[in-house]
Length: 416
Image 1: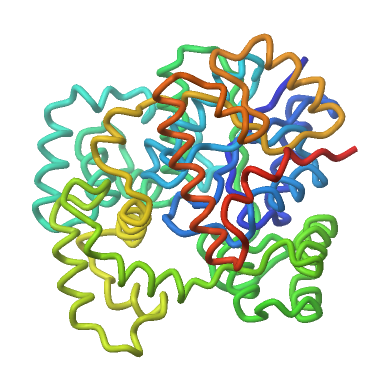
Image 2: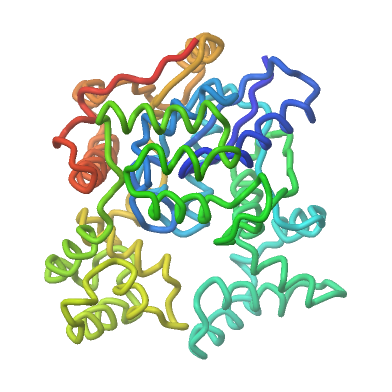
């Protein structure tokens, strides 16, 4: 059985996501290959709640080509690219069935990414020294890391090297490759060049817009189904758009109130300490000092993030620190929980159901179908990581106007 693993957020599922699934099956020359997706849950890697609930996004994916959708736990999903990539690849590895791993890249030079992934940066003193100096000079971590790699890596075209390392999908691809090497499994790696608009483009210039542009359209339309249908037609697969609109019409969710999120963050700043995850390096003091000068008109999320904008810390780092503060995630928690302790099933197709039966026999960790399954677990790591997942889901529910603990009532999505 050919099983293609894909890491995704599907925030929301758009044409580019459907293209990657189809292209991966085409490359392995098997139209019946199982596509198994590891997807972030209530929070995304950037540090914000997802714009749609995870069960709605799972249904979108299953109707548009995926066969199994698994959830990446919050502590890995809402994390820097290295931890995000490691947790996702480890989940795919621990299913025991994945044969191929497919992901998108921003660069045409995949060989360069492969060579970079083989470099032993962890034990390279020159890299460590360069990274430290770059950080002391005020660079953000991604820029400092990119420049440090360029300093020590032998490559003729240094400008191409730096440009490659500045692109988000290339950084993730590099971290996927590094994670794959850790598990020493001979996955067939499928790197698919991005088509359409750039990753963070806010403009719609093709039939393959970025998720950023689609989210901007959604925010502009609010919960108006007619406006959403008119604006998003052709930019998302028909089935994906239909799932979103039908879920809105049946009140399964409303789009998250991000201004309420910003206000809640501001009210709860006293919960944060220097031991809060990602709050180190002076971030906590910076956030408190900046927020202490805010006017009432600056309490919406956009104004708040504009005020917090700085070259010293990426926006993602600040948002992940805020999310960790809201959910009580500490640096010690991250240091202690380095591995994904379970596989949570969000949905499956008919073919995916058969795949899950095999995973049940091959998986190296417990397979979780419903929240109630966590009650049967005695492992402290499973209990701690799942508790954080449930807290993250409840925070998103509050922003979407949904009752708390709905995670306990929603079974995996099943499509024919």
